[in-house]
Length: 138
Length: 241
Image (tube, rainbow over the protein chains, first blue to last red):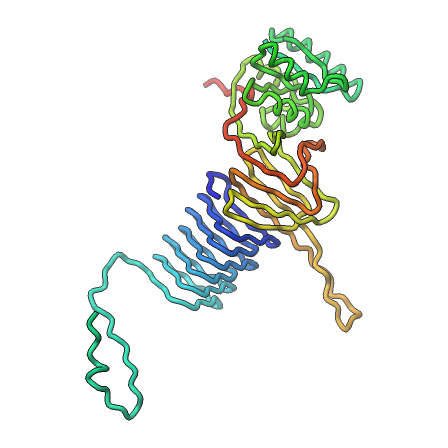
């Protein structure tokens, strides 16, 4: 659903499934199973439950989101908000009480030059073998 | 030359209003053929007659439901003029005045604005806001543009000519009882939703009528389709600077 209309509001007693897409603001206070995509702001209200990716310029979370969130400008997780999934944003604000479980990426445009060290499991008392320390060549 | 279709007068006062309107239009030099709708000749039949006679502008004189009926018949074939009479609030807002004299002057200056409309299959048209108001909380299921499905409970649903669906509900959440005796009071939960699309399917439980100004134009289940820029209407003349 794409249009130049006045935006979309999903009321508290509404349940949706599918792709909710709008060029204008989207506000969710009900249940959505699927994508929520706006070219402007996305507001997930306190009563909202979203299962699926959320994407917008400005994303504000006061409800529950299970899925990836991408906010090109700013992501704000309010004190009643809960996010279970990865987030990607330039500017992140998490209020005290907000819950976030997942990975966070904050792209700055700078490329990292160091390769992350491979993880190795070492049990106490064991001497790491050469095979464990040398990373596999791919 | 304009072709005027007048809604059957509901009272003597309205008949007198129509006489004043005739005089006004004559003074403005835009008096044309005037037809009065009646049980013998419906507004739709009169509009078809006007089109067959070659009129490029059909003027609806009456309330909102009457204007919507005329629009339904002439869409794509003629320009719509409006003289709002009585409680024609939507029509008055559309053209920019609820004053009969001013509306007649707009006809003289003939400034056109283009509006969207919505087709409610098979052959109904929504030009002014259509409302569904069930006697008690009802359920609506909808599919928007084939991509988004949903359902909601509502007390009132509005469909606009831009195919915006507004769903309002207000219901009481049962109060909790303590020890089965004492209630802590209920809470009124209000919900307002707004969607829009180009193709919308609406189904309600039970089937309900869609009303414009209290008169039915369609009934659920409905397949709604947006017709962008489909109706030209004579509206308020812009100010001259």
